[in-house]
Image 1 (cartoon, rainbow, N blue to C red):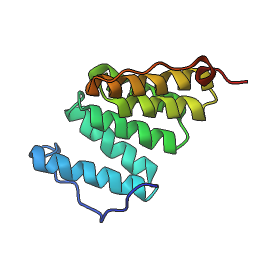
Image 2 (spheres, rainbow, N blue to C red; image 1 turned 45 degrees about the horizontal axis):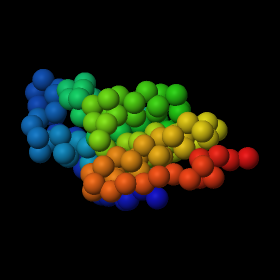
Image 3 (cartoon, rainbow, N blue to C red; image 1 turned 60 degrees about the horizontal axis):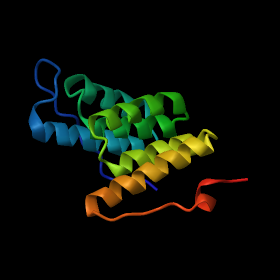
Image 4 (tube, helix red, strand yellow; image 1 turned 90 degrees about the horizontal axis):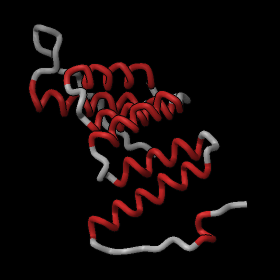
Length: 140
């Protein structure tokens, strides 16, 4: 379940651009509020505006992925989570999100691979090790 937040207005400067870091945070919160309200077109438009100014913002790419996935557009959602992963491949949550899109899309094997990558990324951060048993990686 997505968290509910109070609506926040988007702060723009005279040129129609997001006005500074605080305004960017407010704009992200505004987009999340629209997403929570299931107003997908508004959330998508806001995330796209953010990405027009900050195309390398992996979190905004990830949230656009969520918006598109929730709106029923897995191919576009996959495009944006893949971009986020290219920018920040060490984010285990992004791998998990990719796996969830694939799972919803019915691509179970590919989804499992993404989930395993998420576990490996988390373990690399802690210096731990894991070996997946073959029974974990097959389904029938």
